Image 1 (cartoon, helix red, strand yellow):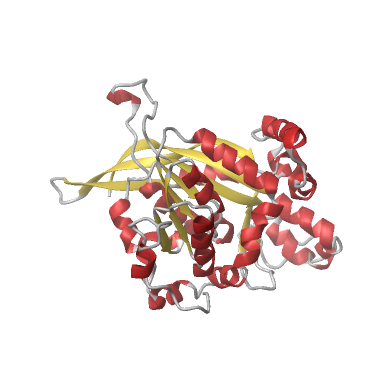
Image 2: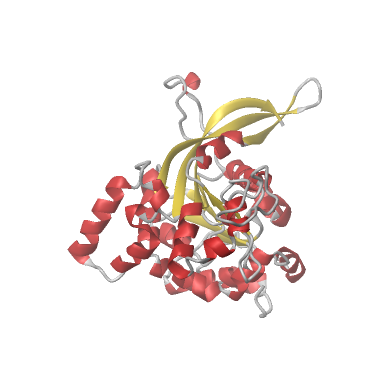
Length: 364
């Protein structure tokens, strides 16, 4: 958490760059949230994180283009969960969308409010909350279930080690989305109309391994026991014994950052299956004869996966940061041509899934 006291919500409500529904957590509530290593890390590194998407110009441009091209309509309601310092939120608000920004780090949200003001942009609301316990840490969002046209979940899934935690965060995001009508209600059978879209980002295991090769290539051998588990081999690499991970339960779990924050990295082939496991139940307020609340059940369907650094990967992509005009346009044209190519996904550090909901009748 920021060492500065939280601003008076009433004073923030008078800020023309923050909409009337702005809600800031009380100090005690925010302190409880920030007990996690993730919140502490981003509170301590908020300025660096604000600059990261400047040094990662290609990642930001491809991600933003993907989001904008997948939105349907104008002046949409968008929730940016894990949106940090507001880089994406502000750009989407510039296009006329009503953006609610949510993050676990109050320090990053403070920067986001300043960034919006400097850009002469109004954000609809700012909430300090935990993506995996969204409605518990921000009760105000409970009244907004099913009201958003789009949700960005571009960051929280990096730091949820257990699959059930990732599924919970994805399900929470899905509950915020508007429910579409299926084809059997007047359209083509099986086709969804008017429903919301989710954008979820992931970090790849290959991206991490490229970083090891760049910074300290001998580490893979020295820590072969850990990396055998990380890669799901069930045994160590080289001459090293495994770390007891015989069932593959440590695959993708990176727990050795000096800052104490944990990370989860994916193989590109995992992503579609992960979304297929998540069921999103949206209460409709109707009670059946057995006293159960009837709801509209949804499952996620991945529309496409996008390689956010393209075939270059993060290191080579940084070489493009200084380009402008036709030089930048030429590279973006080449990269965007292949961002959805299955062969390119493993070359990128960050992947972005574009996901929609399909119908499933359930009791909730």
